[in-house]
Every structure is written in C-alpha cells, then in structure tokens.
Length: 113
Image (cartoon, rainbow, N blue to C red):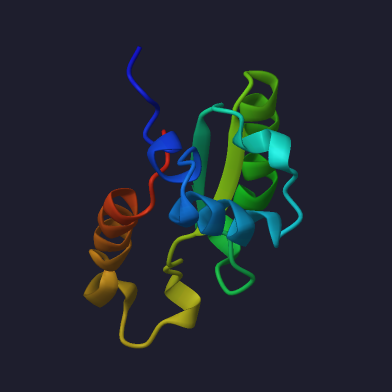
C-alpha cells in the first residue's frame, strides 16, 4: 500500500519527523493523531471583513466533523478572502491571488487531501 502523502512528513522516524510532529503537538494535538491516518487540509476564506463569507466558519466546522468521523485528522488553514466592501481598488485586481495561494500551499504542505 502506498504511503499517505501526509505521512511522508509526519510519519518519519528521524529528527525531521520528530520536529514536524513537535510543531503540531505544540498546538495541543496529541501523539496518537500521527498514527498514519490521513491529514486533511480544510481551506477557509472566512473573515470578519468579508460578510459574504461569514457562513464559511460554520461550514468548516461541519467539514472537520466529517473528517474526524471518517478517521482523518482535519487541519484548517486560511486563504485570502476578497470582499467587495473592504477592498480598494476592487477585488478583481486580486482575484487570482487565492488560486495561487492554494496552488502553492498544496505543493508546500504535505497533506493527504
């Protein structure tokens, strides 16, 4: 069976693996979450400055619960939120930034999904 992508990072039994797990344990995550289960990233554009994305905070919590129930380890991370009322010039000048951010993060962070 092929090793999960997230385990290529967190499942290592060397100094680097110890450091990666330690950084996550620093956030309060217990050791048993690094037992080989898939680590699933949940991107969220929720922001108090973007009223049209206000419901995403609650939706992300539902998604996390689903990942936990399926045996995964969900980790939420922020993505740039573009809102019409809070951007000058208009958000259309920045519309590709969230896409580039997600592409970069998906390559840099070793999540399974």
